[in-house]
Structures are given as structure tokens and as C-alpha cells.
Length: 394
Image 1 (cartoon, helix red, strand yellow):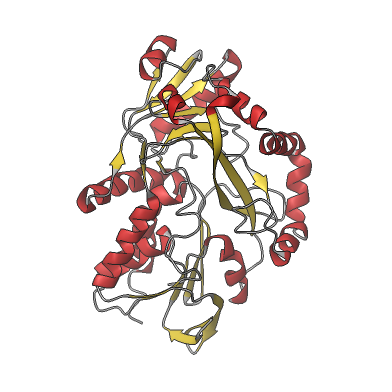
Image 2 (cartoon, one colour):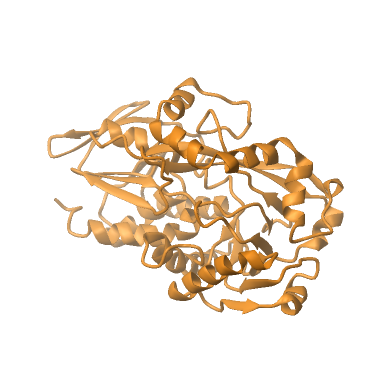
């Protein structure tokens, strides 16, 4: 197994539970498990509203949410079904809200209902809009704590997790695979690669197509000062742009009591650009040399300019959230954390919406697993384990 983020750990656990005699080794480039997308997100357990019915995201998010809450209950990991409202601020957004409602119902989201301004005020007294969707099944958790619990369970079951061991290539070798890493080379019957921001590069080493390519989008958050946290009871989201796989800047209460505003979505110069000034030549060149990057920017130039404005101006950032929580002001916020979304982008300039899982010989590559991958991780693990049934003992 390559990658000790929440998806890789969940899959290693699932395979170990189904095949107790299987020898499992997990390679992780960082010194801690769950160091990247797993630990750098808002902690929302999504209910499955946004995703195209029938897609992997739709099926695995709904199933994954249920599995995630069950896992947290069993392991004593703090979590909460705090609920979420998606707010239409004017009538021009009602058609898009209708579409979200239809998707949520088709996907089997529990408890989803349309509400008006009066019910919205009961749920979120400081929010305003002409209509909203209420999802009581949406919740929050610390996904890094989930990843650590998964790692602990794996080690207790006898699996080996090798941290600070970057994998550099996954190659066909004698009916199996050779995993080349920082400490040498390991031969195995099968490799499963859940490498997040580096998934495309490892797939190419095994002979896969370079399309799609991972392009890093930095998501920056602000956080509310403690005195302003009472403005938000749960999760408050806008109606998103249906053409993009991003949900717009929103307000999210976290399991540790913070309230985050964001994130932005800015193409950056490193696949681990948690600090905006971090640039890695290899990452920057990979993004700039990819034809899909320029096609995307031409298609969504206005959106890119808006994201730059939000990243550069705290006042503009807060104003975007104040559309649906009018009492917010720039004086209410402090600097917050940042994450990097590993988003697959096609050479044609299309952002890949669904999870992408490819098999190549004896290697399996998870090539696109952005949000809601953390929510879906336990269901992704079950889905992949089903696909691999009968193939692990050869």
C-alpha cells in the first residue's frame, strides 16, 4: 500500500480484516500518517447532496458517511451531526437549489428538506436567504484522529507502516510489482497506490497515461474570533457554481469549537503549498506545462480572478460570507489554516468530478480522490476490496 492518508489506511484495514493472513505494508513519505489532505480540511462529514446520481462520489459518500459515524462511535472519536444549511440568497439561485435537492433525494440523503426563511432563522438565527436546504445528517469530525485510529488498528493487527519512506516508482516485476522507495526496493504480489497529490506521477511510472494530471488548488481559511462564534450554530453553505467541483466559501463549525470561513481555490506552485509562498520547481512546471491548465483558465478566467481577489483581500473574503450571514465583518476574523486539494485535471481543461480508480497489471491507482474522499474513505475501501476479491491470493 502506498500512501498513509485516510483512504490508504482505510483500504489497508479493510483488506486486513477480510484477509487476515495477508501481509500488508504501508509506505508513507511523511513522518506522520494523514499529513496532507486528511489533516488539512474543514472536518465536514458530507451527506452526499452535491454529486451526480449514480457516480462513485454519490454512492460512496452516502455509504461512507454512515460508516464514518459508526467507526467514530465504536472508537470513541469525537464527532457531531451538527447539520447544514445550503442557502439561496436570492431567487436567481432557486433553480440551482432545486437541482441540489433533486440530487440529494436521488442519492438517498437522510432527512434532507427544503425550508423557507422562517425555518432558516430557527436553525441559524444570524443567516438570511429566500430559501435553503437543510441536511441534518451532515456532521463534523477530526479526520486526522480517524486516520490515527486506523493506523493504530493496522499496527495492532500486524501490518507495517513505514513512515518517512517516499515511494518513487511502482513498476511491473515478474508477475507482481516492484515498489522503489527511499530505503530501496520492495517486491510484492500487488500494490495499491493512494498517493493523493502525487498519484499521477506514480501512475505514470507504472506505464499509465499522464492524463489526468494533478493540479494543486490551495484552499485558505479564516477563522472567527471567539466572541463572534455565536453567529454560526452548525454549517452554512452557499449554492455552489454547478460547473465547478468546489462548494464556494462557507462557514463551518469544527469539532474543536472553531468556526472556519472558506476555503478559497487558488492554483499554486507546490502540491504541498500550505504556505502560499512555497514553490517547488517540479510541481510548478507540471502545472504550467499541462495544456489543461491553460484551457481551464481560459474557460473560467472570471472565476480565477475572483479567487485571486478573495485570496488577496480579507475584506472581500468576509463580504462573500456576509451575503448569507450579514452581521459578519472583517473585524470578526483571524488568520486560519490552509489545505491543498489534489484535483485531477484533464488535458482538455475539464476538472475531473468523480473519483477515478485505475488498474494496471498488478497495481491499482486511486488517481482522483478530492472531497468527499475523507467522508467516503471507509466506503471507498469496501468498494476497492470488493473489486480485488479473488485477485489477492494469486
